[in-house]
Amino acid sequence: MASTTPIAVRLKVPENVLEIDWEDGVASRYEGAYLRFVCPCAGCRGHGPGQVPEPSWEQCKDVRMAGAEAVGAYAIRLKLSDHHESGIYSWDFLRANDPGPGSTHGT
Image 1: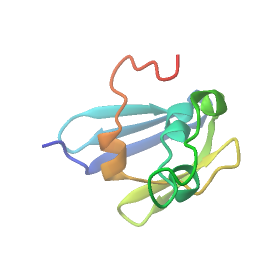
Image 2: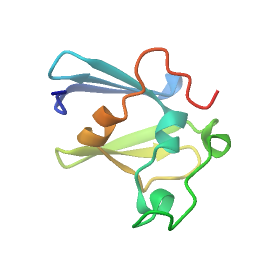
Image 3: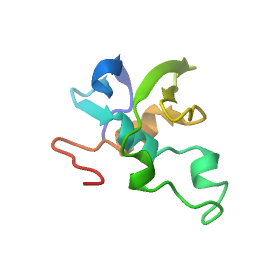
């Protein structure tokens, strides 16, 4: 089973990348546009299926990360260039949504 415990988290704002090294030795790399596209918040996903339209790749493709803050020991909240700051990305969510090497989401 994949570890959902990060041992290192690096936000590289100029590169628009969040890097996470997991306890099991896997390294994940997330681009800002991808994280905006998969945002788990209720504003993007609703409180139940079909309540709100999910963001399109076209809406997200130019979004950049501007900052981040820890949410307890279980998650990170991102500050994004489109002023979206309500997404709380749990470690479980991030590991489950690892785009993997060579990802080309939305292209």
